Image 1 (cartoon, helix red, strand yellow):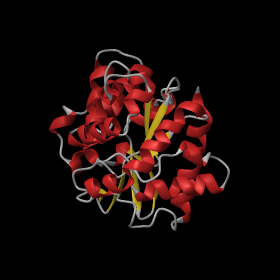
Image 2 (cartoon, one colour; image 1 turned 30 degrees about the vertical axis):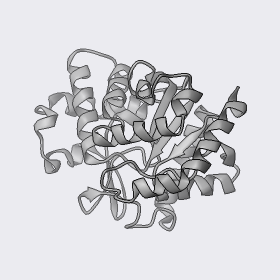
Image 3 (cartoon, one colour; image 1 turned 60 degrees about the vertical axis):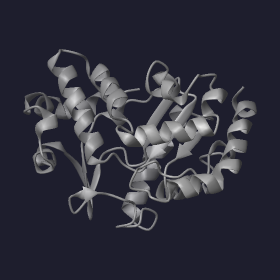
Image 4 (cartoon, helix red, strand yellow; image 1 turned 180 degrees about the vertical axis):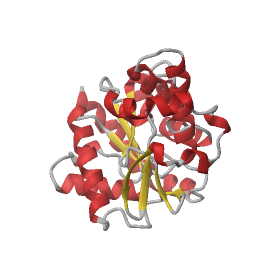
Length: 249
């Protein structure tokens, strides 16, 4: 599923920009790419969350794309558009390129393998989910477009995701659509803010608790506690991954 109309809104500006990987933040966080305000947050366009891999057997949900992901996604979409490819192809390429890009992806793959996710999916390694078996993994962000607080990547705390009513409502509406497109698919929330939203969705009856892998640390290198958090939760998370087999087969 691709929201082609939204990409169409930004297609011409993306195509006409200078090489996007050469642009600074202030050259990308511009009015022409602005999606909406959820004061004090500002949301800007990136195309990779417009596409949903509907054959996916696993969902990994982050908080919001950071600037690096935004830049990579826009650059890949720009290349696709300039090559004459469709909106759907541009979004697909952007998603493949940008999702959890950089060292964060390597950290994520290592943790998934330690939990046996690749064995559950009958893969040699979870790295396949970002390569030849990319269709088995749908990555998303609970805030689908890059969100910035005073020009910095939004972290979930200022403002508090669950306490900021307009933002919370926006996220719930987005995730409700995601869950409808991928019903009964296990989901891994990354970080406490995302996990808090998943608990709210469970309370509202929109998500089955047993589908969620609770306690998975955010794989960012900036999360200095991720190794300790992973070690503390590894046993319970491994058991949950084992249970997923009976849930979906």
